[in-house]
Amino acid sequence: MKKPNRVMSFLFSLIGQSWAYDEVEEVREVIATRSFDSLPERAEIHSKGAASLTDSLAFQPGLVDLHDELHDTWVYLASLKGRAREMGYASLAGHLEAAADSTRDVMEQVASAAEATVPAPQVPLTR
Image 1 (tube, rainbow, N blue to C red):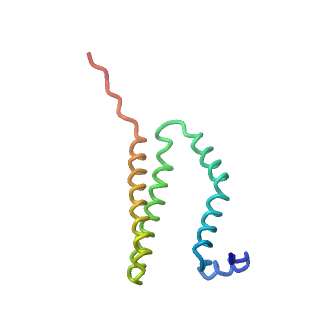
Image 2 (cartoon, rainbow, N blue to C red):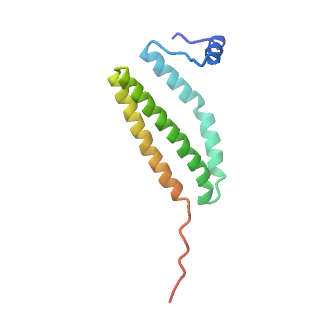
Image 3 (tube, one colour):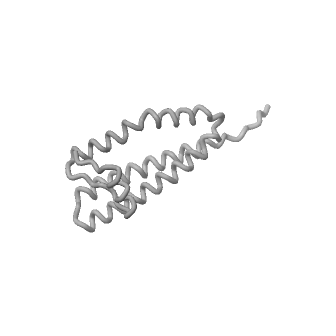
């Protein structure tokens, strides 16, 4: 696999570009490597953060932030889909549309979870 060295990666970043791969296997490998290499660290960070939550309201700030990140991702995917269609890449546009739809679905569930952090009002007992 042709991998950019650190100097080339740095130079690309200075001009707002990044490395693109020519083979599907290369794309799969870089995605898998980035995902699996960082998994233990990410799992530890998020597990520690989750362990510190003390009540339902404590979940809310993270869920609201996550919703915002997902919203940005959804807009990004929708923009990429539109551009892919303009350029005649129907298959790519289809994949991007599916990804945007899935992201929207996750965003809706995260919003529902954030709403569920608000405790139900106490109902007084009556006789």
